[in-house]
Length: 472
Image (tube, rainbow, N blue to C red):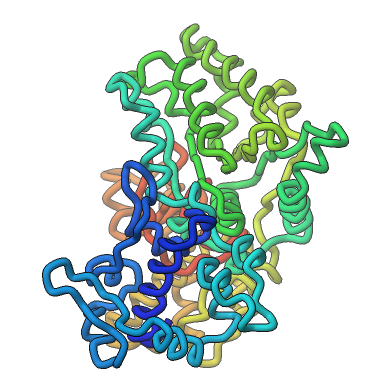
């Protein structure tokens, strides 16, 4: 919303109408509004539209200054509450400046003014509004309640829980193969028609295994699905169950699934699934083997149809999975390295906000055979940084070709076992430490193959093979 006065007036109208209409529920409030009114008791009426809540909900720095010149506004100096001296005039002013598309994003006002616009539907607005249980504040409140016991707090080290608004990857930023698109469409339809699938007895659905080399977009696609479907994203790296400070490993595995079912509907993403097979075939400690058996049993018991948990496993090493692991999944989604056409598409997506003279993505794609989406992101990063050293923000095609050559040279250095001296110092000087085994960068948001977690860095993704931000 570009007009500060319109944003503040809408906020005050929404707070007032929600307070008056007891039929409305928290799911009717826009997510940004819910966040400012949330308390340990949930959202309680009446809602108070103060300068503070208006600032936080609308992003307008000085909300009272934005509306103080309007004839129908007033503010209580003591409490900071913004109100209308003439609500009818306020509504008339507001309705002259909005349309049905605008109100579709606010179910509270869609309910209020549904009869004023031919194309406005409260039910449609409500359906498209993110539900309260996908909000960060709701997730935190549930986790705080569930992990009241200090002994259980260690469990939160095992999982990374993200609200949909915290997932920066979206489906339209991905470059997918036709097979990937088909499988994702299937699962989206399964989620939409859960009741029908339950009625016909088709319950063994909603367990996907993503397989492919590091950097090909497995983590990115899983997270983008969470964003697309407005679902909390629960991520666990299976190698973490061996961490000594986590206590009883089998119990912690059970807790992972308990968290997912309590946050449902949600996506449970289990990375490094090859760890299961490696553990079953090794001489690992008996406690770890019990944990793996608990994991396999828990996977059998959880269901998209019954528990509203979409389970996605991911592995870089499908060859290491045994039959017990494979049969837990009803769909296998392959993430191969991209071909020329896909690399060109990835480059086009990644560079949408860049200024590049004579840009020919297909020419770059032909020079980057074997590179993953994460690798391409690193190539572009180096090209941008090299240009900045020359005080340029406009790149050239040659900049990209030079960056490809530099990337390949540095990547080759990591494979030269015969080089004496400090290998880490050698690759660190190139600024790509960790990139050679799949394109993980310093800006990774998914950690690496060791399970080390890194914070999200944002940036422009480069698709299903595009900027995966992770080792996968």
